[in-house]
Image (tube, rainbow, N blue to C red; front, side, top):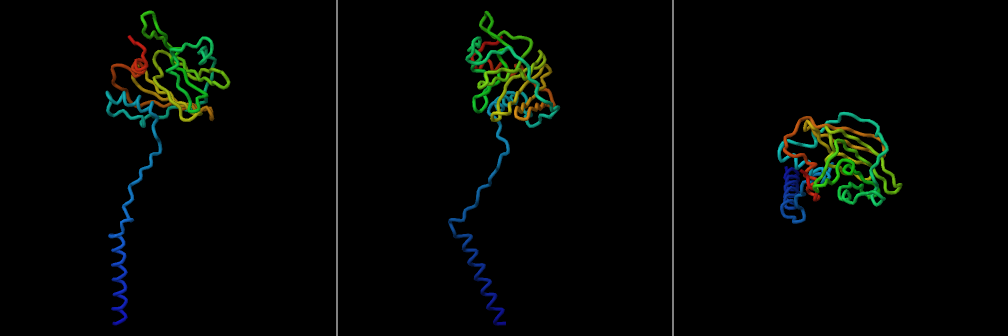
Length: 212
């Protein structure tokens, strides 16, 4: 009986000491919850999606569905290279550079020019060119007819470029070019959007280009 009382007292003292440590030690503060985000969206993607969210509250870029994977097709292009003869400086603010600045995308200079009235005059087709400043080469990586057009683009580092586009039927698409692996992934949104003006017009106006 004495042994039982002895061990019981030890147990109670031990529990009391632990309780004191938990409740009185100021160094023991609750750890904040850490949320790890696996993907940080590019600011350009955010601007593009935010614009369409204004008229389409349920629009979510995570809903894009992979439709096709294929090799990248490179073709010749007439697009002029930055700082070379024939390049029009009006397109410089619209070039989309890779992280290192050694490469950029040009999807504007083939599609529009400034008309006599000072506003953008559009061609029916659009060409997307990849320019390598180190090798001083330009290659076409995409060509669109009047029913589809690229509205924005951004890079993931130096080897992956993403095109964000829309269509005559108001169904957005996304094309991801992995130049290291030479693969093109084409994604399509599963629904149509509602909007008065496409983002492409807003983009031009934001950089001082008049659009009728």
